Length: 298
Ligand code: NAD
Image (cartoon, rainbow, N blue to C red):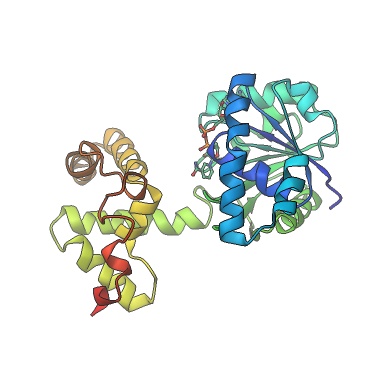
């Protein structure tokens, strides 16, 4: 892997974190977004992430300054990608937006540029054709708060070049990630293939009145040694995400239990703005949720 220049498309929640993380690890990073106003908002996040890197990773001011020097910004796509070795796409999770983006990108990117999507739920094969370079296209999926939850799932599609795949694995390691290669396409990658069924089983036990959230979490924590149970995890992920997944499934399948689950989450959490850690309350109250109290498992 001899990548030097990285372009990040989309400077939202994940895009900016990936840009900062890559710049912090010495890559030259160009941040691209649809207009300069959005880019100004992205720049404003530099100080917030700097503080987080200092607090959580003991980063020095010198390292932060260097990261700042490694970052540049543009709303001109051709300019953004003109010397990119790797472009990481973090535009909204909407197939039409992504397809349109890749179609435009394909016209202006140099031949050498590898494209990687950070999509959480869409498969790379869905966009491979619109990239105009299927063999140089794959998924590189990060988790929110990338500097602490430093996983990178790497997933190709049928015709991704194995050398490109290996290079992206190396790049992920080079920016401090735990690289997690998948051997084939899988919706939800590894993490969500495990997590989504766990979380929906937990809400099913709750909605069907089998047990209360604390008892369900205690069971999982004590029996497996996990530091949090499914409801503690749901508060971190955000109850809105679980609600949206259940609501979509309910609308699609008209399954009675899914409808009941979506209604339950709406009534008890969404309508009350109890969305989890982000609003200070979900299944638990923050900053000191009961499940972190040593007494919880006694
Ligand atoms: P976001 O809404 O915070 O940011 C999206 C950014 O893309 C915005 O800045 C927007 O202006 C920009 N954008 C819109 N259209 C664009 C275009 N045509 N070209 C360039 N930029 C464009 O979204 P996000 O949460 O950062 O998610 C981005 C991607 O990352 C999605 O595919 C999502 O599935 C994935 N992801 C998100 C998370 C998460 O926790 N938020 C975690 C892992 C992966």
